[in-house]
Image (cartoon, rainbow, N blue to C red; front, side):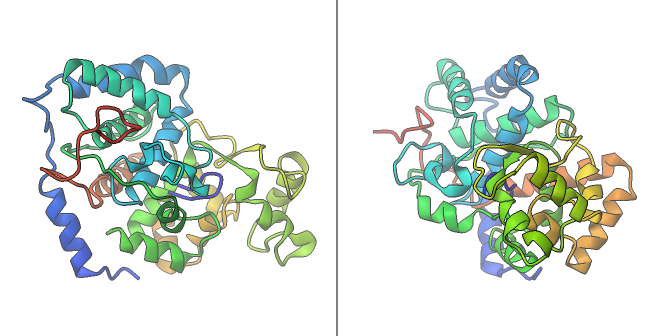
Amino acid sequence: MAGTTSLLGIVVVFGLLAFVGSTDAQLQLNFYAKSCPKAEQIVLNYVKLHIPNAPSLAAAFLRMHFHDCFVRGCDASILLNSTTGEKNAIPNGTLRGFAFIDAVKSLVEAECPGVVSCADILSLVARDSVAITGGPFWEVPTGRRDGRITNVTEANNQIPGPFDNFTTLLTNFNNHGLDATDLVLLSGAHTIGLSHCPAVSPRLYNSTGPGGVDPTMDSEYAENLKANKCRTPNDNTTKLEMDPGSRKTFDLSYYTLLLKRRGLFQSDNALTTDTTSLALIRQLLSSPPQFFFDQFAKSMEKLGRINVMTGAEGEVRKQCALVNS
């Protein structure tokens, strides 16, 4: 899930799995069926009304959801305004869509004050936005509570980065209750959306190959990026397609590019350096597209359960950017 400076061994600490499992048990589909029966429809209606006019927001919300869940779990801490909060972390510098989430929250609050959490709203918006734009659909059990703490240092340290190698990536995913399969599948979200030059410039100008190019990157692809996109090492603003030519379509093109050494990030290329992950990439490419959709959905469902707070934990914020007074 890397954006400007971010993405999104199989042994996992048992205690972490037990914790994830215990919180997951309290999430349930249609959690608000009695307390706010129109909640999920309100979210979906707003997404249907606005996302077709701004489809690139689907990638933005998917990334926001991922970044939120990797820091203190899926608790909407990424939405909080704070000078020392997650919004100010380097990987979150180009996140957008906060006003959209606030607008959905206002509509839900008008229907059922103080009932539906911002964490659930973000989870639902991410899912609905991707599905509306032709991507996979996944189940979103609800009942999450909102966190009261947001920490910029935690975000900088815990969100996967575009220069991470496979071992670093897998360790990070394992620490969040995810495995190598989830790593490959969730990285597939890079089939949609944009990044910026700082996430790739070191591969183009400060690496060990001829002309400073990363030798693990296809030379023609690298030269094209240098000639037409990141023309200088210090370009901080030019946007880049993470899946050139197919960034608006949720498909398998991203994985095809990986096998051609045309992954934008070092972390993308890293997926081809491990035999297990490489085998899964090849399996995805040799299977019908629906297989990818189904497997991606399973990993998204796991992501959405990471260290959630439920019951009396945390709070249900009245405004997503502010903790309750």
